[in-house]
Length: 421
Image (cartoon, helix red, strand yellow):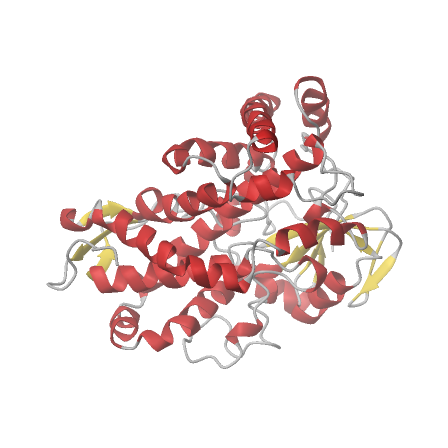
């Protein structure tokens, strides 16, 4: 289809913020869509996405191609000179190389560990609410959705939770390239300098944990090798931390924000969850399906491939659409409707599928469940404090970062300050 000047575009911040009508159009008309401005292909159908994620031999996670406005080469050059350039680890590798990194992290993010962490996660949620419950107002994005996962990932990494705003600044800079339609060199350089700050801080932590290990994830990674195995290099550690910090902040923050936004749009859910906590798991899964925190991730074709009748050339950037797939009407009946009774909500692809299924999915789900259990217990009649400014989200091709979420509430009589067990 020829590109029309006024045609809808995923690079339009208004469409990026509310893309679902455009997704539905693409699924009906062009399920594999070439973005005219960049040449990247977008996969929008559920079954096509599953196919791409399983066929890593044709759709590699080690993405090396760039698009117009991409600052990747500049970033690599500066990081190489002043820090540690990006190299493929974990989500940016394919099997069998991927298995080495995945095995290390699977030892940490286990079901047993998350179960053991649940009282701590509950306590973090309540302690954050203690800070604003009596005020009747908060800017939820900055006052709860960001610090809750930030404190928890900082604790797991063995970093200082009181420095959560610093770590959030690092995460935003590391993700900077995906947050503007065409990044300026000045913005790119600013983000690179912030990432360098993070790298040099972390390098000191790696060395300290090598000499004095603790019971935290960084120590586990630094010492995750047998007598006959090479330890992870500083390059590998830096890139693993890049992924853990950005994932620990951005995606869970977004999921918690969108869960709260759902509660204010459908206030009857607040009462339902308060009176019937057994519905919380269903609520979490439907939030993840309805407004997926990760809308797209990148792959690169290793050869010419055909998907849904569209031929994609070799060495082409492909955006796998978790957001569109979770609104695919051939998989989810009335996908535009938030339905807490949806039987197959758990089939959502918010955390991916196949070898690259999100290593932190169990933790993220528990953080969401703990957060909303505490919020609906402590705060009653939650509402928007004022209408949200359009577009609601900062621009991002890959995520759904909300600009703000100001809320008010009534504090129920039983919702006083949390007393730790």
